[in-house]
Image (cartoon, rainbow, N blue to C red; front, side, top):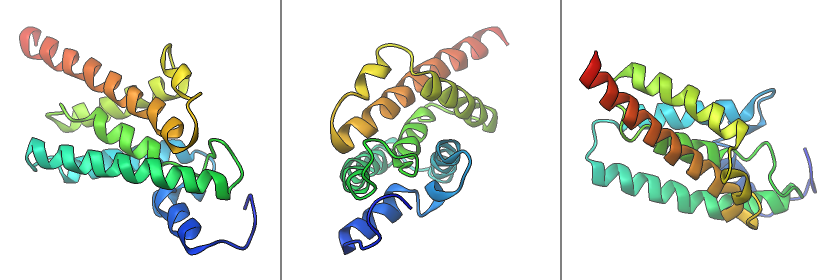
Amino acid sequence: MKGSLKRTLSERVSLVLASGLGVGFIPPMPGTLGSLEGIILAYFTKDLSFGIKLIVFFLLTLLGIITADVASKALQDKDPDEVIIDEIAGSYLSVFVAKSLLDFALAFILFRIIDISKPPPLRRLERMKGGFGIMMDDLAAGLLTALILFLIIIFKSHFW
């Protein structure tokens, strides 16, 4: 594991939370697994009101900013692969408009493509410092995915 072996309690808690309860330490594709965690969380909260899902999203984002910042410092890496709470929050946001299991699957694929390719201006968001910078490009990817999914759902409902 990168960084010092001796960790404070806040570092250990942050590492557990920022890594999606340890999933971020599973090779070889921790970001993909984190995205899947976010989609699964969204699926299990799909029947909640929009307001409650928004609260879950904002709490996840706040938790992500704080824990990603502490974890990145503990691991001595600006954006460590093990920190996947950004993918969890981004993919959770990506399915806010999903109506079917197919929509959830499509959002997962779109989110991964957008997150990995980081089209402009998403790449610029990575330049922000600390936990905020770690989170913002994935949240923007989630928002872009939700917009594309929304357009697909509208198109599908009118033409299929």
